[in-house]
Image (cartoon, rainbow, N blue to C red):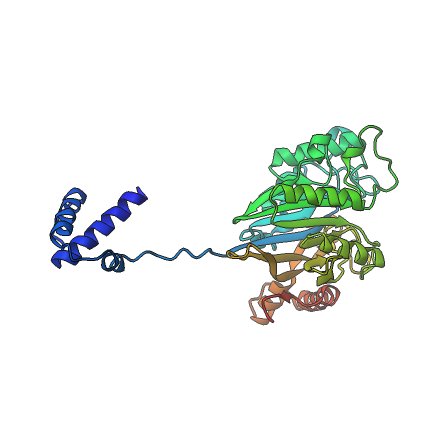
Length: 413
């Protein structure tokens, strides 16, 4: 069809060039015939002059853009899932927690978080710390929020054994959420999760430092992706072999409640960036830690650069220690250069969030508050938020921004 259209366009140009006009209501066949006769009678016309009259658009490769939304640990403590229980329906509903943040999930190309609490099923008895078993309806509510991928490699993934690990993946599958970091068999562990983000082939990997001392089941060592450099390299190479242009690695690492990364996190971050991981998403400390663009020079003298968010804090939890209620929704903008094919992190913005915990028995006991929105609404005298909540929002936003650091705009030289 494209060839016929081009032929028609060239033929029409020939006719116009020879006769000065195109007859009204002329069809493709007539135009072709007229053009043929015109060419035969105008033998002085050169090929160059004909081609000059045909405008052929220049094909310029376009850049591709995508946004990755990322958030931290989903810690489903017992008071939290009890607050989500509806006695009238006999079911759980966690969606009320997300009412102030759900809009941020609408425009992202893909969203990813960490499933810290296993879902082993009601028959195992729902439980909180120290061995979690969250109601499986949590997966449904996360999907309705707009979550696409959950990482499952963390220190609680074997809280309910291999069967609990497998059930967690089953419930995520049922909800339509993809997952990475744990596996039900060797084939699943060897399958790299690759998503097409507006034309950018992106691989998602996930690893954890350990499983709280719970040994990997004998003969099922494949079930958890542990932080092991040789294994990590093999997964990176698999991703590259499958055409990954962008590699995102989620790392469950660091020291709990420590607001700065430790030396091991720094070392592993450099190792990942040096081996072509472009984005590192950290979890586990339950508090926010800094983010930065990290530059590393490899053994060949090549400079590599990537984004590292050392810890994203708790997306939600019942923890009340200092800094554990501070978190953020991160928006990572990436670009693939249409000419060179190079993928870069263009910018990172974030929405400071505070997990507000009300007294036991209160309606909507756990709320993820959008601190920017509260401040803006109060300062515009909209009458939605109290002065005390306004002051809380200012203090907690300042705390978030201090812990994370400034937003990143990598396009400014």
